[in-house]
Image 1 (tube, rainbow, N blue to C red):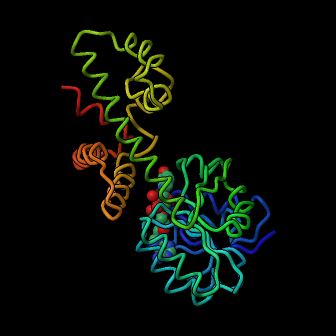
Image 2: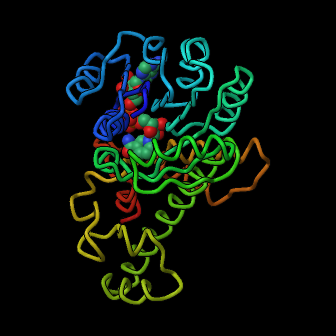
Image 3: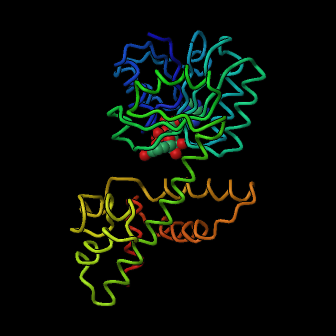
Length: 292
Ligand code: NAD
């Protein structure tokens, strides 16, 4: 049993904090939203009325917040001032690489160990305790974080030094966005040229055009395994969240001087799609914009 402070109990954090309680930890929980706090209380967390209180006395402090500016602000206003020395900071949010490295360096100056541990898997995986964590930090930080993360997920992978977890996450999702867009346009080209889409799937899924976007998450309804396409593109991974991750990847490409022309084009396509989509559809629904 560990004393854990958990800040950010939204779509993802709510289920993750509940799984820590189920694993036998004492979880002190804080969120700006009263509704999220009440839910966490019902799941067995101890809700508190400010972030300072969640952090005081905690051996591990987990954050699951929207973006880098929220993590920076919570660390600066509450965590650094109240975290007991020797406690471990685990940020599970998906944030920009520069902020992840900056907050870890600031933590080190305060004598605190910090790791970035963004997740793969959506709300269902957060609720079910089947997330995959990609961890950036020292060997010592990773060793301390692993058992806590294992109580919320099915896989915990040490990616490298601080920031490496965020790098792994955004590189993977930029690649996924680009391959999904390419898979969608290729299905639509095959259709225009009169090829049956099931036939194209049968051939390409066993040929060199195969990818996860095709064989695990096929964007065409009725073709391939069950996917959001078979449910009117509802559920799954919202295009807006994909766009957020792709933008983080482009920001990192710019600051590191990397050339990512395919990532840039995919970001433009997703940007236009998200702007026009009022329904919060899955990212594979981008196929609809290529179907003319
Ligand atoms: P969310 O908006 O549902 O939850 C964020 C929570 O943080 C909210 O409850 C909000 O009230 C709280 N919050 C914001 N500022 C705060 C502050 N200063 N103090 C305390 N609480 C504060 O978002 P989410 O879907 O849970 O996502 C969280 C992170 O996980 C994001 O970085 C997201 O990119 C990442 N992520 C989400 C998914 C997904 O499917 N939703 C999948 C993988 C990764």
